[in-house]
Image (cartoon, rainbow, N blue to C red):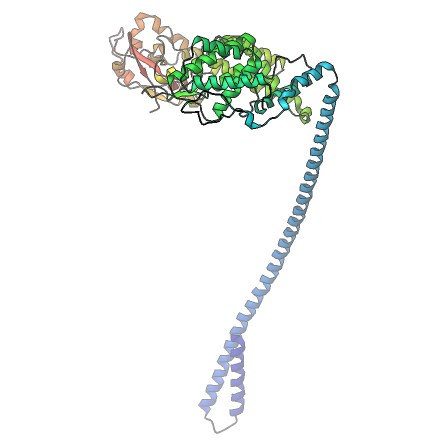
Length: 563
């Protein structure tokens, strides 16, 4: 725009000069000025023309660059669009495959059910289902009036009867027959449904009412449980149906959040009831009811108001000494039944992966029940033998077997391992404290086979992980503490020797100066300063547990911490 303006002005000046150059009316100076202005405007127009050409050139270059970039972007957009369409097609194919597979699975389940139904053609099997017919009947809720003696807490209340179904209640009945495996599976499912099925048998309804009233009076109304009352309760749970009703009643209290017992008398009453229940379970080897009792014992508790005790005292502490928990035959049967119960609940469409699923279920059940046995402080060797039998029978892989053995060995040793819920109540209350014995510590015995000194942190050949050697302990003022760690406090000048040699120091009285810095050596040199100037590395297992330090018969609990 500027170029055309200057060029137009220059042309106009040239035209004016042509008009006046022959005219004598104008002076020569005026003519020269017009010509000079015309030349100047022409020069400016040429400069503007150069600028204009450069701008046009840059515009053309940008246009070419724009075309190249747009072509690439359009190409990428086309590729993305193709990819999106392919993804939509793949998603549609997956939906079709899923729907087809779902339909095929339904057909497979239907065929399996037909096959099971066809096998139910014998009189004894029909009798078995007839014995279960009461489980499928219903009746009006109005008939369920609980005859409980009126008290201020319940005279205007209607009590709920049925709670949430529990999978692991026993599904055996007194009239059950020797069914095939398929019939047992169906019977087990019917029996699991019985927790929410209304009782129409008058005898069962009366037993349910009596059980409801007995438990409420004993657990919540502080009624004294004398010998006659306990004998009556024992007679009610002699049958499997009575034990199932008892479990349902406790389950009702649990689901209604009535687990907190109000007094120590209620706590003791429920402990007596559970102990009688366990006696009957042990007598009849009712594994499912016994394990469910163990579960309930972890739900019901009493608040401890005294200082220095655990906040809650669970019922497991009251039943942990029962002889059923020490019986390995019971645990063997419990493992078998728990595994079979879990395996029976698997779907038919996992047939292709049945072997792996079975091993996973067996491994999970073995881990759980091994932990329960360890919580009751059973012999680890016997536990290991029992677990190995099931590992061999179900052909578990070596990795799972090693994992089970590791859990067994490390139980209660390393941080993160759990201990019995009520077993460690004494530890929490301070009645039992971990103390190291005099002499060679256990952790040092375990590392005596090392080829290098465990305290030599500079060695690159340590077999112990580096994080277990990172914490250090200062031995300042060790003369006042009177260290009694045995061979762990040997003279640091001997740290290049094997730890097995240092274990002899505590047995030789002549080497007492190596155990106590205040005792002078045979050369008469006191080693207190040498010990106070040194820092040694201790394994992490010693850092995590309380170590007994002291002199003579007096002992102090001293926990080493990282500086």
